[in-house]
Image 1 (cartoon, rainbow, N blue to C red):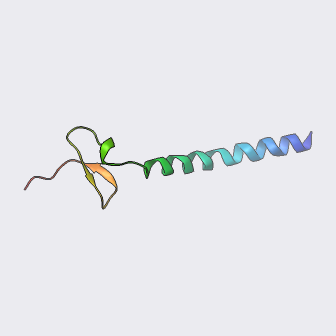
Image 2: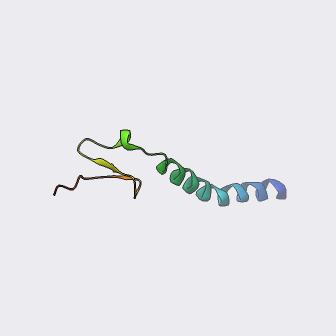
Amino acid sequence: MKVKLFLATLALAAAPGMAMAMCSWERTQQSASQCEQGQVWDSESQTCIAPVSS
């Protein structure tokens, strides 16, 4: 019984960290083809931004 409780506690404690790791990994996989209409890819910040007109 103590082993099951320990494993369950360990799994619940590790879950938020795993979720955050998955989230940040997926964000780095974004590319220009995923930008919304009217936005452009900024390679420096690795995100989609509104175009700057000069």
